[in-house]
Image (cartoon, one colour):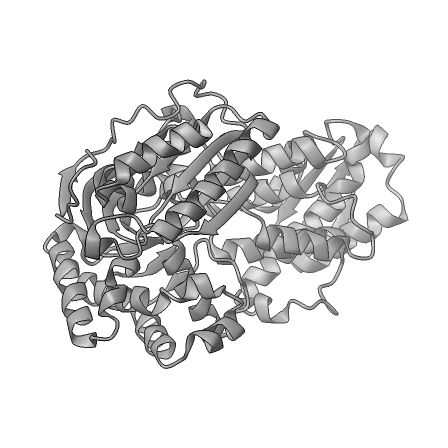
Length: 513
């Protein structure tokens, strides 16, 4: 309920927000769904499209307004920020009409929730734009952000922590379920006034973080960070470490790297941080406070590892409404299937390619099998790229695409295998720093997969079924190809060369029957 300003802590054991969000659409179809998130620091509109289990961002625009700036002093939304928010929301409403987006869900979080004029703000938004704003409670916000993590990270197990401009939400997550949720009034915007009194700032941060630490369920587990300020800190951690793969989702930090990066951040001025990271001044101005909060959280919770999730409350609005069967699908494989369906020359051949090369990968883990399946689905989606750069385009797309359910090491493995799909060697490529993140054995396995796909793809024009059989005997170091009549006619010099290259990668003798 929006009314007199309240900065009390909220807590609840819950797995559902009980929100009626997205009730007007069929759960089976989540294409062209619009979400507007009126946050304490920014107002953002996102339109999702693509595979329901792994949606793509058809539209994504963010305006830094600062609705929560100064809220702790008078309990009112910032006047200038409200004007900027109204302009942004009017633009979004117009875009929604022109893009014919339906339905559209509009939610507001801590600043509007806490402000005494929050209800009036929502009413004015409706009168001027026609948008109905749902004000989320702190528990609903924590729950939805946690569910957003599951959208791109089905097996996430630990603690989700979402930082906004005016609040901090924490939730226990595991086995696809959201457990204990806590919301505290700890956000960079409501701490700006304490920046000149470092002792008071530290006391306020530690007070709220200690409250979170009272719950033993939050300690000693993996920590999944959600929110723009956390993303900015992770980007700066990458720059400090000179980490070569600039992908934030599933980026991993340790306790030690957090402490070192916070110390590094606090020793630099905002302009210098902007120069090294490319982050905007609007985003960076709150980073020093957010860094202090993260340092305190890390000390209190002592997480095993600290991961960045690019998915949060907006994605949680989608995930919450998915039927159970859809939630249990693999977001990586679903995204790859859609990509093949829309972009490959021979949609459906990826499954046959996997069947054909599978004998080479007899004793690999389930995690590796899903990467092999994904690679086969993606093996032909970039055929439109210039032949001279096709291998590089494949690598870039795999390592930088908006894909969920994929660690950084898995991204690189997938990228290397697709590079070898179009190129017999990785020499003279500009990826040596990124490739250094994989072991020599992992690089070899990716090469074998890529060369197997490169060879198998030579049969793609023979229809859905490859009229040949591939066998691999590691004890005898023999890789054998049995051809049927139809495929014998096509076994020419190029095909033989690719088969020999695969055999060499396996360290085997090639035999054709």
